[in-house]
Image: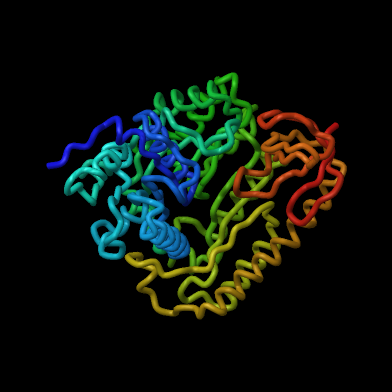
Amino acid sequence: MSIVNKNEQKSRSVGFIAMGCPKNVVDSEKMLALIAEAGFVIDMDSDNADVVVINTCGFIKPAIDEATEVINQTLAKKRKGKIKKIVVAGCLPQRLKEKFLEHFPKIDAVVCLGARDNIVNVIENLFSENPAKFYASPADWVNTIQKDTDRLLITPSHWSYLRISEGCDRSCSFCTIPAIKGKFRSKPLDDIVAEANQLADAGVVELSIIAQDSANWGRDLDEKNGLVKIINELEKIDKLKWIRPMYLNPSGITDELIEAIAKNKKVVHYIDMPIQHINNEILNAMHRPDTKEKITALIENIRKIIPNVVLRTTVIVGFPGETDQQFKELLDFVKQVRFDALGCFAFWPEEGTKAAQLSGRIPQKIKEERSDSIMLAQQQIAFEKNQSRKGQIIECLIDENQPGQPAIGRYYGQAPHIDSICLIDNCTDPPGSFIKAKITDFKDYDLLAEKI
Protein backbone atom coordinates (compact mmCIF):
# COMPACT_ATOMS: atom_id res chain seq x y z
CA MET A 1 0.00 0.00 0.00
CA SER A 2 1.28 3.47 -0.84
CA ILE A 3 1.78 5.92 2.02
CA VAL A 4 0.45 9.45 1.52
CA ASN A 5 2.34 12.25 3.25
CA LYS A 6 -0.23 14.14 5.36
CA ASN A 7 1.56 17.48 5.08
CA GLU A 8 1.74 17.12 1.32
CA GLN A 9 -1.93 16.21 1.18
CA LYS A 10 -3.05 19.17 3.33
CA SER A 11 -1.32 21.53 0.91
CA ARG A 12 -3.67 20.39 -1.82
CA SER A 13 -6.35 22.88 -2.82
CA VAL A 14 -10.05 22.14 -2.51
CA GLY A 15 -12.66 23.91 -4.63
CA PHE A 16 -16.30 23.85 -3.55
CA ILE A 17 -19.49 24.19 -5.61
CA ALA A 18 -22.59 24.71 -3.44
CA MET A 19 -25.95 24.02 -5.05
CA GLY A 20 -29.54 23.75 -3.90
CA CYS A 21 -31.78 25.11 -1.18
CA PRO A 22 -30.89 26.96 2.05
CA LYS A 23 -30.63 23.64 3.89
CA ASN A 24 -27.97 22.60 1.37
CA VAL A 25 -26.22 25.91 2.01
CA VAL A 26 -25.95 24.99 5.70
CA ASP A 27 -24.46 21.60 4.79
CA SER A 28 -22.00 23.29 2.41
CA GLU A 29 -20.94 25.75 5.11
CA LYS A 30 -20.38 22.93 7.60
CA MET A 31 -18.28 20.93 5.14
CA LEU A 32 -16.24 24.00 4.19
CA ALA A 33 -15.47 24.66 7.84
CA LEU A 34 -14.35 21.07 8.39
CA ILE A 35 -12.16 21.21 5.29
CA ALA A 36 -10.57 24.50 6.37
CA GLU A 37 -10.04 23.32 9.95
CA ALA A 38 -8.23 20.24 8.61
CA GLY A 39 -5.69 22.52 6.95
CA PHE A 40 -6.66 22.15 3.30
CA VAL A 41 -6.36 25.22 1.09
CA ILE A 42 -9.83 26.33 -0.06
CA ASP A 43 -9.54 27.56 -3.65
CA MET A 44 -12.24 30.01 -4.76
CA ASP A 45 -11.37 29.05 -8.36
CA SER A 46 -12.75 25.51 -8.51
CA ASP A 47 -11.62 25.18 -12.13
CA ASN A 48 -8.02 24.69 -11.06
CA ALA A 49 -8.34 23.08 -7.64
CA ASP A 50 -6.76 19.69 -6.89
CA VAL A 51 -10.06 18.44 -5.46
CA VAL A 52 -13.53 19.75 -6.25
CA VAL A 53 -16.47 19.02 -3.94
CA ILE A 54 -19.93 19.46 -5.49
CA ASN A 55 -22.80 19.62 -2.99
CA THR A 56 -25.92 18.78 -5.00
CA CYS A 57 -29.68 19.08 -4.80
CA GLY A 58 -31.84 16.15 -5.90
CA PHE A 59 -35.32 17.28 -4.91
CA ILE A 60 -36.87 17.83 -8.35
CA LYS A 61 -35.89 17.10 -11.93
CA PRO A 62 -34.76 20.67 -12.79
CA ALA A 63 -32.38 20.53 -9.81
CA ILE A 64 -31.13 17.09 -10.90
CA ASP A 65 -30.60 18.39 -14.43
CA GLU A 66 -28.65 21.38 -13.10
CA ALA A 67 -26.49 19.15 -10.90
CA THR A 68 -25.88 16.75 -13.78
CA GLU A 69 -24.72 19.60 -16.00
CA VAL A 70 -22.29 20.88 -13.35
CA ILE A 71 -20.95 17.36 -12.71
CA ASN A 72 -20.39 16.76 -16.44
CA GLN A 73 -18.65 20.13 -16.83
CA THR A 74 -16.37 19.33 -13.88
CA LEU A 75 -15.61 15.87 -15.27
CA ALA A 76 -14.63 17.50 -18.57
CA LYS A 77 -12.14 19.73 -16.72
CA LYS A 78 -10.76 16.67 -14.96
CA ARG A 79 -10.17 14.96 -18.29
CA LYS A 80 -8.17 18.01 -19.38
CA GLY A 81 -6.00 17.70 -16.29
CA LYS A 82 -7.21 20.85 -14.57
CA ILE A 83 -8.77 18.93 -11.67
CA LYS A 84 -7.37 15.77 -10.10
CA LYS A 85 -10.29 14.45 -8.02
CA ILE A 86 -14.04 15.05 -7.81
CA VAL A 87 -16.31 14.45 -4.81
CA VAL A 88 -20.09 14.68 -5.12
CA ALA A 89 -22.13 15.12 -1.95
CA GLY A 90 -25.67 15.99 -0.91
CA CYS A 91 -29.21 15.10 -1.84
CA LEU A 92 -28.58 13.60 -5.28
CA PRO A 93 -26.30 10.82 -3.97
CA GLN A 94 -28.67 10.30 -1.06
CA ARG A 95 -31.55 9.85 -3.50
CA LEU A 96 -29.76 7.61 -6.00
CA LYS A 97 -27.52 5.71 -3.52
CA GLU A 98 -25.11 3.30 -5.27
CA LYS A 99 -26.87 3.90 -8.59
CA PHE A 100 -25.18 7.30 -8.64
CA LEU A 101 -21.87 5.67 -9.57
CA GLU A 102 -23.57 3.84 -12.42
CA HIS A 103 -24.46 7.24 -13.87
CA PHE A 104 -21.07 8.80 -13.07
CA PRO A 105 -18.42 6.06 -12.82
CA LYS A 106 -15.56 8.57 -13.14
CA ILE A 107 -16.50 10.40 -9.92
CA ASP A 108 -13.83 9.70 -7.30
CA ALA A 109 -16.03 9.73 -4.20
CA VAL A 110 -19.73 10.01 -3.39
CA VAL A 111 -20.91 11.30 -0.01
CA CYS A 112 -24.51 10.83 1.16
CA LEU A 113 -26.18 13.29 3.54
CA GLY A 114 -25.52 11.39 6.74
CA ALA A 115 -21.80 11.14 5.93
CA ARG A 116 -21.45 14.93 5.63
CA ASP A 117 -19.20 15.30 8.66
CA ASN A 118 -16.83 12.66 7.26
CA ILE A 119 -15.83 14.94 4.37
CA VAL A 120 -12.22 15.42 5.58
CA ASN A 121 -11.57 11.66 5.69
CA VAL A 122 -13.13 11.36 2.25
CA ILE A 123 -10.72 13.93 0.82
CA GLU A 124 -7.72 12.48 2.65
CA ASN A 125 -8.47 9.02 1.27
CA LEU A 126 -8.75 10.19 -2.35
CA PHE A 127 -5.03 9.93 -3.00
CA SER A 128 -4.48 6.60 -1.22
CA GLU A 129 -4.36 3.24 -2.96
CA ASN A 130 -7.80 1.75 -3.69
CA PRO A 131 -9.81 4.44 -1.84
CA ALA A 132 -13.47 3.94 -1.02
CA LYS A 133 -15.81 5.54 -3.56
CA PHE A 134 -19.18 5.42 -1.81
CA TYR A 135 -19.86 6.84 1.66
CA ALA A 136 -23.39 5.95 2.72
CA SER A 137 -25.44 7.57 5.46
CA PRO A 138 -25.22 5.60 8.72
CA ALA A 139 -28.19 3.37 9.44
CA ASP A 140 -29.20 5.45 12.47
CA TRP A 141 -28.96 8.74 10.55
CA VAL A 142 -32.77 8.99 10.25
CA ASN A 143 -33.00 9.02 14.06
CA THR A 144 -30.49 11.82 14.60
CA ILE A 145 -29.85 15.37 13.49
CA GLN A 146 -26.38 16.72 12.80
CA LYS A 147 -25.07 19.79 14.60
CA ASP A 148 -24.53 22.84 12.40
CA THR A 149 -22.27 24.91 14.66
CA ASP A 150 -18.84 26.14 13.52
CA ARG A 151 -19.76 26.83 9.90
CA LEU A 152 -17.81 28.79 7.31
CA LEU A 153 -20.51 31.12 6.01
CA ILE A 154 -20.98 31.53 2.28
CA THR A 155 -23.85 33.96 2.79
CA PRO A 156 -22.96 37.61 3.50
CA SER A 157 -21.54 37.89 7.00
CA HIS A 158 -24.56 39.78 8.39
CA TRP A 159 -27.27 37.20 7.67
CA SER A 160 -27.44 33.46 7.86
CA TYR A 161 -29.66 30.39 7.93
CA LEU A 162 -30.57 28.58 11.14
CA ARG A 163 -31.78 25.02 10.57
CA ILE A 164 -34.06 23.80 13.34
CA SER A 165 -35.13 20.36 12.09
CA GLU A 166 -34.52 17.78 9.40
CA GLY A 167 -36.68 15.38 7.42
CA CYS A 168 -40.45 15.34 7.00
CA ASP A 169 -43.33 13.11 8.08
CA ARG A 170 -45.84 14.57 5.65
CA SER A 171 -47.02 12.34 2.81
CA CYS A 172 -47.44 14.90 0.02
CA SER A 173 -47.88 12.76 -3.07
CA PHE A 174 -45.62 14.92 -5.26
CA CYS A 175 -42.65 15.22 -2.89
CA THR A 176 -39.38 13.28 -2.65
CA ILE A 177 -38.16 14.89 0.58
CA PRO A 178 -39.21 12.14 3.04
CA ALA A 179 -37.48 9.54 0.86
CA ILE A 180 -34.30 11.65 0.68
CA LYS A 181 -34.15 13.24 4.13
CA GLY A 182 -35.90 10.66 6.30
CA LYS A 183 -38.44 11.18 9.03
CA PHE A 184 -39.03 14.51 10.78
CA ARG A 185 -36.65 15.16 13.66
CA SER A 186 -36.19 18.34 15.65
CA LYS A 187 -32.83 19.81 16.62
CA PRO A 188 -32.64 20.20 20.43
CA LEU A 189 -33.46 23.71 21.60
CA ASP A 190 -30.12 24.10 23.40
CA ASP A 191 -28.29 23.35 20.14
CA ILE A 192 -30.44 25.85 18.24
CA VAL A 193 -29.79 28.62 20.77
CA ALA A 194 -26.06 27.83 20.91
CA GLU A 195 -25.80 28.02 17.13
CA ALA A 196 -27.78 31.27 17.01
CA ASN A 197 -25.51 32.82 19.65
CA GLN A 198 -22.42 31.73 17.74
CA LEU A 199 -23.75 33.29 14.54
CA ALA A 200 -24.72 36.51 16.32
CA ASP A 201 -21.26 36.74 17.90
CA ALA A 202 -19.80 36.40 14.39
CA GLY A 203 -21.75 39.46 13.19
CA VAL A 204 -25.04 37.97 11.96
CA VAL A 205 -27.96 40.34 12.57
CA GLU A 206 -30.64 38.48 10.58
CA LEU A 207 -31.47 34.80 10.96
CA SER A 208 -33.71 32.91 8.55
CA ILE A 209 -35.19 29.93 10.39
CA ILE A 210 -35.34 26.98 8.00
CA ALA A 211 -36.56 23.39 8.01
CA GLN A 212 -38.71 21.17 5.85
CA ASP A 213 -41.61 22.13 8.09
CA SER A 214 -40.60 24.87 10.54
CA ALA A 215 -43.99 25.30 12.23
CA ASN A 216 -43.91 21.69 13.45
CA TRP A 217 -40.65 21.95 15.38
CA GLY A 218 -40.80 20.00 18.62
CA ARG A 219 -43.66 17.72 17.68
CA ASP A 220 -41.35 14.71 18.11
CA LEU A 221 -40.13 16.15 21.43
CA ASP A 222 -43.65 16.50 22.90
CA GLU A 223 -43.41 20.27 22.51
CA LYS A 224 -46.61 22.17 21.69
CA ASN A 225 -46.21 25.40 19.72
CA GLY A 226 -42.49 24.69 19.63
CA LEU A 227 -41.63 27.40 17.11
CA VAL A 228 -43.07 29.97 19.53
CA LYS A 229 -40.63 28.70 22.13
CA ILE A 230 -37.71 29.03 19.68
CA ILE A 231 -38.45 32.60 18.65
CA ASN A 232 -38.96 33.62 22.27
CA GLU A 233 -35.50 32.26 23.08
CA LEU A 234 -33.90 33.89 20.02
CA GLU A 235 -35.39 37.26 20.94
CA LYS A 236 -33.18 37.25 24.04
CA ILE A 237 -30.02 37.40 21.88
CA ASP A 238 -29.17 41.10 21.92
CA LYS A 239 -27.06 41.14 18.75
CA LEU A 240 -29.87 39.70 16.61
CA LYS A 241 -32.17 42.27 15.02
CA TRP A 242 -34.34 40.30 12.57
CA ILE A 243 -35.69 36.76 12.96
CA ARG A 244 -37.41 35.35 9.87
CA PRO A 245 -39.27 32.01 10.15
CA MET A 246 -39.48 30.29 6.75
CA TYR A 247 -41.41 27.29 5.37
CA LEU A 248 -44.54 27.47 7.53
CA ASN A 249 -47.07 24.95 6.22
CA PRO A 250 -50.66 26.18 6.71
CA SER A 251 -51.73 23.28 8.92
CA GLY A 252 -48.93 24.08 11.37
CA ILE A 253 -49.72 27.78 11.77
CA THR A 254 -51.63 28.16 15.04
CA ASP A 255 -53.22 31.20 16.63
CA GLU A 256 -50.43 31.12 19.21
CA LEU A 257 -47.77 31.31 16.49
CA ILE A 258 -49.52 34.19 14.72
CA GLU A 259 -49.79 36.07 18.01
CA ALA A 260 -46.12 35.43 18.76
CA ILE A 261 -45.05 36.78 15.36
CA ALA A 262 -47.25 39.82 15.90
CA LYS A 263 -45.90 40.60 19.37
CA ASN A 264 -42.26 39.55 19.15
CA LYS A 265 -40.18 42.68 18.49
CA LYS A 266 -37.50 40.90 16.46
CA VAL A 267 -39.60 38.52 14.35
CA VAL A 268 -40.30 40.23 11.04
CA HIS A 269 -43.92 40.39 9.91
CA TYR A 270 -43.31 38.06 6.99
CA ILE A 271 -44.92 34.66 6.56
CA ASP A 272 -43.74 32.16 3.96
CA MET A 273 -46.66 29.74 3.65
CA PRO A 274 -46.72 27.24 0.76
CA ILE A 275 -50.34 26.41 -0.11
CA GLN A 276 -49.53 24.41 -3.31
CA HIS A 277 -53.14 24.64 -4.59
CA ILE A 278 -56.58 25.78 -3.48
CA ASN A 279 -58.99 23.34 -5.11
CA ASN A 280 -60.05 20.77 -2.52
CA GLU A 281 -59.94 17.81 -4.92
CA ILE A 282 -56.40 18.67 -6.02
CA LEU A 283 -55.32 19.26 -2.40
CA ASN A 284 -56.72 15.84 -1.51
CA ALA A 285 -54.88 14.22 -4.42
CA MET A 286 -51.71 15.96 -3.27
CA HIS A 287 -52.29 14.44 0.22
CA ARG A 288 -52.25 17.91 1.72
CA PRO A 289 -54.14 18.24 5.03
CA ASP A 290 -55.50 21.66 4.07
CA THR A 291 -58.75 22.77 2.44
CA LYS A 292 -59.75 25.93 0.63
CA GLU A 293 -61.95 26.90 3.53
CA LYS A 294 -59.16 26.43 6.11
CA ILE A 295 -56.57 28.29 4.03
CA THR A 296 -58.95 31.19 3.39
CA ALA A 297 -59.82 31.49 7.07
CA LEU A 298 -56.14 31.27 8.05
CA ILE A 299 -55.13 34.08 5.71
CA GLU A 300 -57.96 36.27 7.00
CA ASN A 301 -56.86 35.59 10.58
CA ILE A 302 -53.20 36.32 9.83
CA ARG A 303 -54.06 39.64 8.21
CA LYS A 304 -56.39 40.52 11.06
CA ILE A 305 -53.77 39.91 13.76
CA ILE A 306 -50.77 41.21 11.72
CA PRO A 307 -52.17 44.02 9.51
CA ASN A 308 -48.78 44.83 7.92
CA VAL A 309 -47.87 41.21 7.23
CA VAL A 310 -46.11 40.30 3.99
CA LEU A 311 -47.43 36.97 2.70
CA ARG A 312 -45.44 34.73 0.38
CA THR A 313 -46.60 31.40 -1.03
CA THR A 314 -45.83 28.72 -3.61
CA VAL A 315 -48.25 26.86 -5.86
CA ILE A 316 -48.09 23.92 -8.25
CA VAL A 317 -49.94 23.90 -11.56
CA GLY A 318 -50.55 21.00 -13.90
CA PHE A 319 -50.99 18.36 -11.21
CA PRO A 320 -52.38 15.15 -12.76
CA GLY A 321 -56.08 15.53 -13.43
CA GLU A 322 -56.14 19.31 -12.92
CA THR A 323 -59.05 20.56 -15.03
CA ASP A 324 -59.36 23.98 -16.62
CA GLN A 325 -61.94 24.87 -13.97
CA GLN A 326 -59.71 23.73 -11.10
CA PHE A 327 -56.86 25.78 -12.49
CA LYS A 328 -59.16 28.79 -12.88
CA GLU A 329 -60.15 28.40 -9.23
CA LEU A 330 -56.48 28.69 -8.27
CA LEU A 331 -55.90 31.65 -10.57
CA ASP A 332 -58.98 33.44 -9.22
CA PHE A 333 -57.81 32.80 -5.66
CA VAL A 334 -54.39 34.30 -6.39
CA LYS A 335 -56.06 37.40 -7.83
CA GLN A 336 -58.45 37.66 -4.90
CA VAL A 337 -56.00 37.08 -2.03
CA ARG A 338 -53.23 39.22 -3.56
CA PHE A 339 -50.15 37.60 -2.06
CA ASP A 340 -47.16 39.91 -1.77
CA ALA A 341 -44.88 37.31 -3.36
CA LEU A 342 -45.52 34.00 -5.08
CA GLY A 343 -43.56 31.20 -6.69
CA CYS A 344 -45.19 28.91 -9.23
CA PHE A 345 -43.94 25.47 -10.24
CA ALA A 346 -45.16 23.25 -13.05
CA PHE A 347 -45.77 19.73 -11.77
CA TRP A 348 -43.13 17.16 -12.59
CA PRO A 349 -43.70 13.42 -11.98
CA GLU A 350 -40.81 12.65 -9.65
CA GLU A 351 -39.71 9.03 -9.66
CA GLY A 352 -40.80 7.17 -6.55
CA THR A 353 -43.67 9.51 -5.65
CA LYS A 354 -47.33 8.56 -5.63
CA ALA A 355 -48.25 11.44 -7.91
CA ALA A 356 -45.94 10.07 -10.61
CA GLN A 357 -48.24 7.05 -10.88
CA LEU A 358 -51.44 9.06 -11.31
CA SER A 359 -53.31 9.16 -14.58
CA GLY A 360 -54.48 12.37 -16.20
CA ARG A 361 -51.06 13.81 -17.05
CA ILE A 362 -51.23 17.41 -18.24
CA PRO A 363 -49.27 18.22 -21.45
CA GLN A 364 -46.13 20.25 -20.85
CA LYS A 365 -47.35 23.10 -23.04
CA ILE A 366 -50.52 23.49 -20.96
CA LYS A 367 -48.53 23.35 -17.71
CA GLU A 368 -46.29 26.14 -18.97
CA GLU A 369 -49.27 28.21 -20.10
CA ARG A 370 -50.90 27.83 -16.69
CA SER A 371 -47.67 28.76 -14.92
CA ASP A 372 -47.33 31.85 -17.12
CA SER A 373 -50.92 32.87 -16.34
CA ILE A 374 -50.32 32.63 -12.60
CA MET A 375 -47.08 34.59 -12.77
CA LEU A 376 -48.55 37.32 -15.00
CA ALA A 377 -51.41 37.77 -12.54
CA GLN A 378 -48.96 37.90 -9.65
CA GLN A 379 -46.76 40.36 -11.52
CA GLN A 380 -49.65 42.79 -11.86
CA ILE A 381 -50.42 42.42 -8.15
CA ALA A 382 -46.77 42.97 -7.19
CA PHE A 383 -46.46 46.07 -9.38
CA GLU A 384 -49.67 47.53 -7.95
CA LYS A 385 -48.43 46.91 -4.42
CA ASN A 386 -45.10 48.56 -5.27
CA GLN A 387 -46.96 51.57 -6.68
CA SER A 388 -48.92 51.90 -3.42
CA ARG A 389 -45.69 51.90 -1.39
CA LYS A 390 -44.40 55.14 -2.92
CA GLY A 391 -43.69 57.68 -0.20
CA GLN A 392 -43.53 55.12 2.62
CA ILE A 393 -40.67 55.23 5.12
CA ILE A 394 -39.04 51.84 5.59
CA GLU A 395 -36.21 50.34 7.60
CA CYS A 396 -33.68 48.60 5.36
CA LEU A 397 -30.90 46.16 6.06
CA ILE A 398 -27.98 46.92 3.73
CA ASP A 399 -26.69 43.84 1.87
CA GLU A 400 -24.22 45.39 -0.59
CA ASN A 401 -22.75 48.82 -1.17
CA GLN A 402 -20.38 49.65 -4.03
CA PRO A 403 -19.02 53.18 -4.66
CA GLY A 404 -20.94 55.06 -7.32
CA GLN A 405 -23.89 52.65 -7.26
CA PRO A 406 -27.13 52.52 -5.29
CA ALA A 407 -26.84 50.43 -2.14
CA ILE A 408 -28.67 47.11 -2.19
CA GLY A 409 -30.87 46.46 0.80
CA ARG A 410 -34.07 44.82 1.95
CA TYR A 411 -37.01 45.79 4.12
CA TYR A 412 -38.65 43.19 6.34
CA GLY A 413 -40.89 42.00 3.50
CA GLN A 414 -37.98 40.81 1.36
CA ALA A 415 -36.32 37.52 2.24
CA PRO A 416 -32.69 37.16 1.13
CA HIS A 417 -31.99 35.34 -2.16
CA ILE A 418 -35.73 34.79 -2.71
CA ASP A 419 -37.57 38.08 -3.02
CA SER A 420 -37.01 41.46 -4.62
CA ILE A 421 -34.59 44.08 -3.26
CA CYS A 422 -34.40 47.80 -2.47
CA LEU A 423 -32.04 50.02 -4.47
CA ILE A 424 -31.13 52.92 -2.20
CA ASP A 425 -29.58 56.22 -3.30
CA ASN A 426 -27.37 58.46 -1.13
CA CYS A 427 -26.41 55.58 1.11
CA THR A 428 -22.81 54.91 2.14
CA ASP A 429 -23.55 52.63 5.09
CA PRO A 430 -21.72 49.28 5.07
CA PRO A 431 -23.41 45.86 4.72
CA GLY A 432 -25.10 44.82 7.93
CA SER A 433 -26.29 48.34 8.72
CA PHE A 434 -29.93 49.28 9.28
CA ILE A 435 -31.03 52.58 7.77
CA LYS A 436 -34.25 54.52 7.23
CA ALA A 437 -35.25 55.18 3.61
CA LYS A 438 -38.13 56.67 1.68
CA ILE A 439 -39.57 54.73 -1.25
CA THR A 440 -39.46 56.96 -4.32
CA ASP A 441 -40.43 54.56 -7.11
CA PHE A 442 -40.09 50.97 -8.28
CA LYS A 443 -38.45 49.13 -11.15
CA ASP A 444 -40.28 45.90 -11.91
CA TYR A 445 -40.31 43.97 -8.62
CA ASP A 446 -37.59 46.04 -6.94
CA LEU A 447 -38.19 49.16 -4.85
CA LEU A 448 -36.27 52.39 -5.45
CA ALA A 449 -35.56 54.39 -2.33
CA GLU A 450 -33.50 57.24 -0.93
CA LYS A 451 -31.81 57.22 2.45
CA ILE A 452 -33.29 59.69 4.90
